[in-house]
Image 1 (cartoon, rainbow, N blue to C red):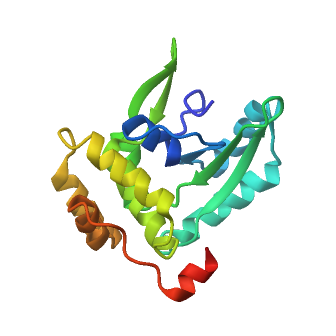
Image 2 (image 1 turned 180 degrees about the vertical axis):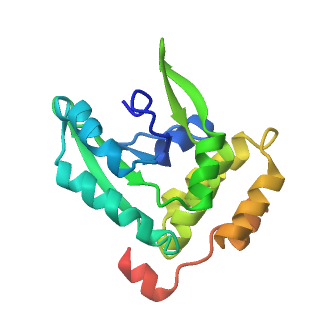
Length: 197
């Protein structure tokens, strides 16, 4: 549906890390999309027959996204719930930040079913996004760390390390990338963080 409306997008999260690293079950899919105001009516019309979605949720996320370019801890999102399978998609509306644009430029077409390609974040961008989410989540998510380590391990011979280091520095996660690449365990959770688990 995004391709038909010329909306740049890519699938990320656990879906993409399962493609590049260790397969694990997931109950939803994360999609980053460059949705703009003029896309909203057509996008809602295309989705409403198959998904539970309110046009107000899309509008709210689209209007909020540009205000969050400098605050990566907050994301403009809305969710879709498939009417028959109840499979959930979390749509993260791009704020236009440079990393979002880079992900769109480097996305990879992967065929999940014959004749049905989808755009998936590159292995490098999957690692970087997981590092960013790990940092945003106060560095306590074992799942995020395992996912990104699995991608690093499985894709080690094909990764663009210069790209990884450059963007990790720009995103403020270079220390975490260095730790992950040196095969060190994730930083220990503080007692306060452990009590939240």
